[in-house]
Length: 480
Ligand code: ATP
Ligand code: MG
Ligand code: MG
Ligand code: MG
Image 1 (cartoon, rainbow, N blue to C red):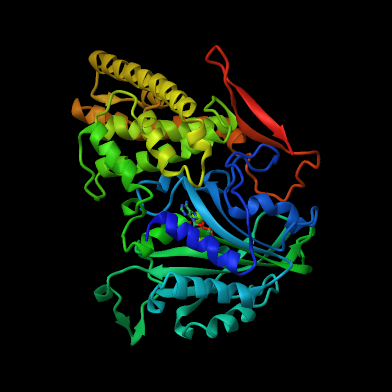
Image 2 (cartoon, helix red, strand yellow):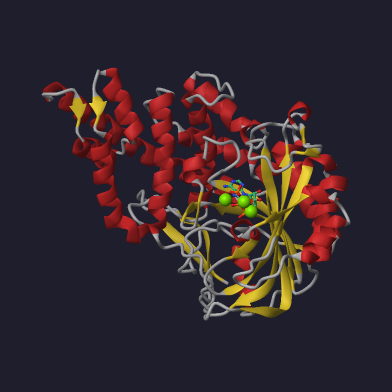
């Protein structure tokens, strides 16, 4: 089954259960002071949960473009190192706004996974909220008992507040959640321990695929929980992880969502991706992931910039450039070449990239080009330093300057130092880095994830870039 078919089956399944299929909201959020980017399927529905707006449908499903690179949800540093956290990913979701609740949500997710996708039941297990005595929240017996109708009890694991109680902010709708995990280890490794299947192994091949959140409480300002009059369901399943499981792969990057990009990159750089943990292969994964994130985010209206959301995008782009510069020996812009491949691949589900492909390509080219020039100047700076150095140590301040001004991560400075018989004063670097972090903390604390009432005036929706004679582009908005 292709990823497209898998996505479509999800939507068809929930349509057959009375859900309205709605489009993905843009990744870029312009009207919510607490969030720069969509990081979960439910973001666009916040007002329905809060009761500020009446949902046009009580049952909704979609695939949502999400980005987890800032605020409370930041997976950036994992990306490429592990094989299942992305910066941008598609979150498949189904919602009930005051309609069905735990019984139906659990039954539908089980039916979809085991009867439509035909996942083997003995690879699945689920987690349920164990309760919290301090807060006086009971164990989620309802969810536990509904799961018992589908799955053996030794596959229902209890989880604590951190993993199994969902709260977006200090106040607002919240409730227990129930996750579904898949054990993808080969049969021979799924040994019995004390006569029981080892289910919750902390293992890279045992991965969470789906989270079902049951919103049944409203957290008050004084911290107390009040039962909500209308109960809601909010679920999210990562498409890339689902596809990996259904295609029998051990990495999201081996699915047809990414292989196109990786093959194309292989031809561009003249090297092979060999599925390993080598830095070279991490670089292939980082490129495949990051080029998607920046392309779709630019297409949704956020240009790279030196502050705010634009700076987040610039940082993702630069992380990709550093990886190809350091580990694939690439010295000229590369990412922009991949944009048309992505645009074609996603044209049936997210046509916004294809519609703006030339512009997105150009923006990425210019960013890459500028940053590569900075990196080259950094190399001249480090060479100059080494030529004039009196000891074989690159001091902390210089390592930090290379990082701050020339975008050199410590890794890269270490690499060049070692090649020239130098070492780096890493402690001194950390001190300088910490000072910088203290100075700029305010800028990255924007995503607080609180339930702030969204702007009640008509929202502006980004509809594309205005083509101008000069290279400057205007952002075009439509009022809804
Ligand atoms: P994890 O524990 O793996 O970081 P999570 O608990 O943070 O996942 P949720 O917030 O529950 O994830 O999101 C719902 C689903 O979205 C997850 O079950 C997973 O399938 C998917 N997902 C979450 N984060 C990512 C990511 N960075 N890349 C790809 N898929 C993700
Ligand atoms: Mg996470
Ligand atoms: Mg989790
Ligand atoms: Mg989760």
